[in-house]
Length: 379
Image 1 (tube, rainbow, N blue to C red):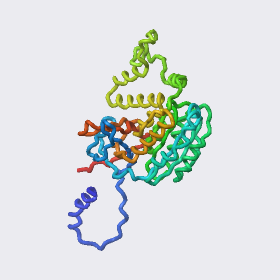
Image 2 (image 1 turned 45 degrees about the vertical axis):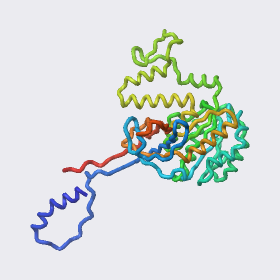
Image 3 (image 1 turned 60 degrees about the horizontal axis):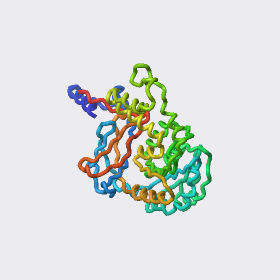
Image 4 (image 1 turned 60 degrees about the vertical axis):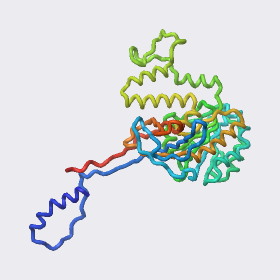
């Protein structure tokens, strides 16, 4: 508009000096080839947050200005969704039926009351997916809680695999197709270690982040043999380039060696600060996901993880989840010109050091996410 006004003012003296002529049809004005086109692909990041006192009591009265959120160390402007507890909820119950999960299937026979606590009172849809070496849809989205509970009460043991990341990607794809007005959540009942997935960890994190899905997990410990086997895949003893930061002394005493993860962390600390922050977040997240998938995917999304003991504690944990889901603050922000890849998020309170905040720690931006801003007006 400023450009058009300037053109009009520059042409006015000449128009006043000429004899008025009958108006003639003017060709439709073509856009200036140098006028910038505003193209915006906006990323909205949701940050569900649970705030409690140190004694565990929920806190409900905070405002958006009470929170401080940084994205890779840069503070962001936050918005707070009002009355998010009444928003519809789409939930996928994701159950490991293979590997060690087969030993716990009987514990899921009486979950109808707990599912009703989680979903009751609001508009909802619930689906059930079982998984071993691959995910299998057992109950598509339904409003019938008893029907979903009936499926959970009649699960069959699977094979010897527990492909958690494949199953999560499958569940996220289901949630992606639900109405955007619905909150999206996954209840993951599985062991801690993924074994058998074809989905890359990076792709699983991207899919979860893209849909703003919150994950609540109840995890039983994988066997020691499985933990050792999976850990060997990402704890390589191969030395890095000689004389470099990532090099390893082949003659070092294994009993005193601190481990490759510690060395990698220290090496990245020597990089330039912006790269250091991003790289260390990537390393910490990816290695943690591999070593304890069920717990760390929950932390990644701002959900919660509970350690599985038996059917009684499972019902207690589901009751806790049902109380926490509607009482979370749902904060959101639009990152400005976000770089592709993993972002580290920190959420704190400005003036309430006696309160404890639990929120997502990361989110992922696809490589094609861009924000193009118009050029400044010319003088």
